[in-house]
Image 1 (cartoon, rainbow, N blue to C red):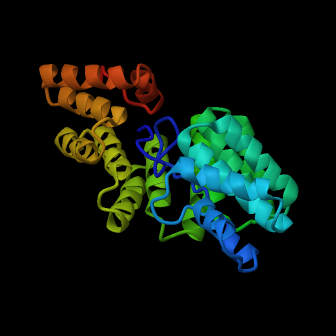
Image 2: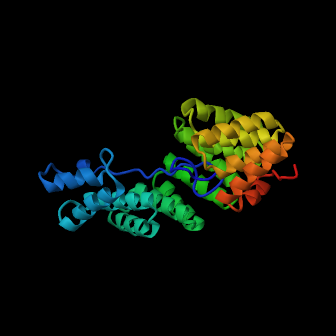
Image 3: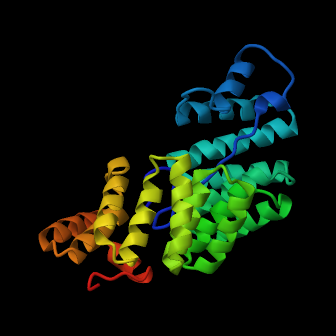
Amino acid sequence: MEIGAIRRMIYGIAPVLVWPLLGSLAAAESPRSGDYLKNIELCNGTGRTSFAVRIAGCTALIDSGQGTTTSLAIAFNNRGNAHTAKGDYDRAIQDFEKSIKLDPKNAKPLNNRGAAYLRKGEYDLAVQSFDEAIKLKPNYGGAFANRAGAYLKKSEHDRAARDYDEAVRLEPNRASVWAGRCWTRAVLGSLQEALDDCRRALQQSPDDAAAYDSLGLIHLKMGQFGTAIGDFSSALRFDPKLASALYGRGLAKLGKGDVAGSKADMTAAKALRAEIGDDFTRYGVKASN
């Protein structure tokens, strides 16, 4: 299951949510007028402000020479978030580093730097950043969920499961952490527990493609191919380019004897993600099954 949006996983098969929590410049500053207040609004991403405009607003604040150390740290953090959302991870990391230097006791830019490293594919550095965020803020559910995502990319599923346990305990109203633990448990083979987690995720977020994708994997492993096809089809309804759902549905169709349908789905999946078959092999499911 790859990342169709920030809400799922980073570049791959397990659902995870990156939570780049923004600071509040308004709370860090005394009321001012004119362009300065406008740039605060833009940097905070009020409304449907584009990422480019957010970056420009934060840059104007940073370059203005005004504001407190705290507000400057928030501006760098917010600009880093906008760079991350645009896929400019190196610039994002540079901004998070500056935010951390200005406000070393704030866990948010540490988490956000980890998120940028995670998307960049530098998983060890991501884990280190999440470690630092959690050390500063032991009840940081988002950092636990993000670190779980990094562990999944490192194929350290037991560690990922423990982090999702903490994320669920700390953020039980976040559908993404239930979906993340569902996927992890499905990979580990704790199928009934995984089912319970996915159902909880879908109660909170009925259009979550990641949760349906995880349900498909569970039912595929259970040999319930018809149900798995329905699950994967639901995932694809919400995310038509989800390679894991296409490949999983192909495997389920193969299990039902639909060779032509299986080939079509699996070919489409490999066009989106060439290594998808290897991913499923690691999860304990092969085309020969």
